[in-house]
Length: 231
Image 1 (cartoon, rainbow, N blue to C red):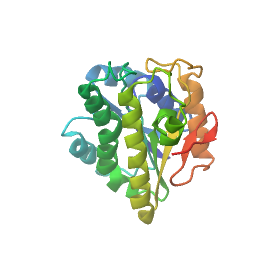
Image 2: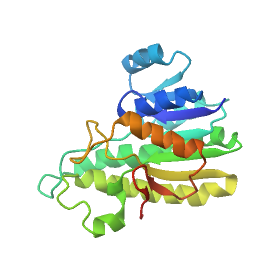
Image 3: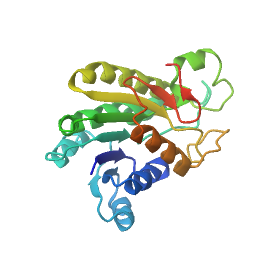
């Protein structure tokens, strides 16, 4: 049985991914922010393991490392994310950027560092960072996001996360760990875009299919809708 760690597992895409990996007989290691979330999920996934922690807290990395001390992890899904509805310079505030950068980038780094020993115990480990098409500098330069309503803070933090993905891919390939970024599609969630059309369940199914079919290569940046994206 394979083991998967999912952050932000209590709602949206994270919850859909937990359901999909459970169908594929993975052992679930779920990171959630509250006892309430744990209690609710434990009913649905009685065999799952839970860590209650805010992924942006200073203690998160050490708590994660201790929790996973004897675990062999095959897969880490960095799904926890945040966004702010501030698509213009007038509406954007520095605190929005700080919040999104903490969640969408620094927390990913903390998760990888906290789970690295466990990933190294696997013969074929993979890190999947749930990114966004809005993190693509090339697409931004070609006006793909102009007028989309997507916030400065979300775009900037996802671009930073993409650079982190490439840094990790460079560093970890020498120890046999692959790192990829996936745009999960235009999801019908609370953070969904104006052109959203895909359910989290459909996205999760496509993501798991990509993983199970071993189609993902180190340094890939993939959309579940259109294939490879430009960084």
